[in-house]
Image 1 (cartoon, rainbow, N blue to C red):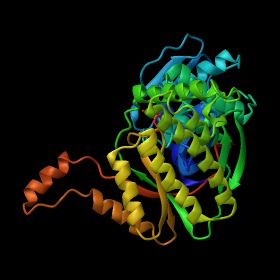
Image 2: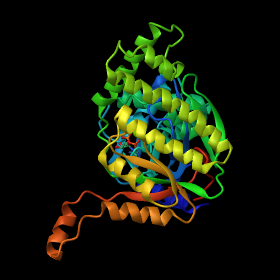
Image 3: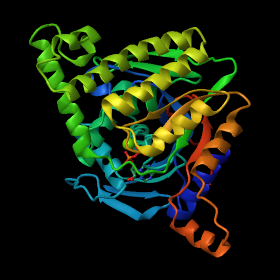
Image 4: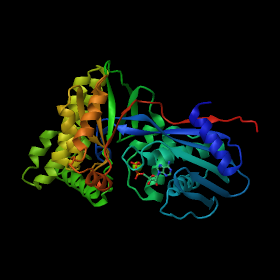
Length: 405
Ligand code: ADP
Ligand code: MG
């Protein structure tokens, strides 16, 4: 039994005075390249990371669900047979999964569940998908439903869309469920087909920089980008019928609509079209174990997100600038929806600390002569970015526990 499992089982005992029957883990993820391509029927390339959500539970007679997440509010309770209503609390993700499973006529009963996570919450590493997937796998195991992993990803996504109310793509849930150790997951978002691509650079690995800038999931900016992409598709399709989404367009198609639409529409479309192209090239770079080539594509992706798609922010741009200036950093880009959250970088082995130090130094508040003022300023300062290595791990796992009391 590993340490996380041991800790969860003993915590379960102290919250519920019971012994759990199943233990589940579900990783967070970081998208290496392919940003904002998902809702354009395009390509993405995430890895599951060694930061996980853990869950453990047992079924209980009756209809009552009790759920606790370490570090979040009190115990939550709901009746599994009742019409579930959103509470604007963490338990919405669990209730959303229950709700979608009920819609699919899975037979469910009461259970008591405990969750804990070391995925940073709300940073763009998809703690939400990890929670949904952990919930789904746990419930499927408790009530002996054998659900295909892609099907479970769809249930988890619908939970986030319909119950929580976030219009998310399928990447996060697929990455959490379907990634393999030491592989990235290439996903074609048009038909949700996927393939594993080995990550086997000889002397480089990925690092995440969590800027701690809270990504105000700026719904209006996100919806605006989506409708700008639709406007580009409509204009191109007027001339080239085979274009149903930006995934089908190429850069030359943009010349054809140059006078017809606003320049900003062209910029948005140029990002999506070039980004899809970069994902395909990135897969080739992985296959060729060409870390330098992969890194250059990451920088290009960032440029495009910064200037054409305009979803970056000062802090993310600064991180990428620092990466460019730090010897041994091969590439970096913002990852996730943007406007804050995380950057991902490809760093040569042995240069990880140098990169972390460079980020730390650039974001450190300026020192003054007066230590009292420094102390006060420290309290007013926004939190400093956190820089850590990540490795591509296996997707979610379930274990049946056989604990004697
Ligand atoms: P991200 O998925 O990038 O971390 P989101 O805003 O999509 O950010 O999801 C964060 C939300 O998910 C949190 O505010 C919380 O409601 C929920 N959440 C994620 N992990 C947990 C957890 N382990 N326990 C309870 N709630 C969680
Ligand atoms: Mg999320």
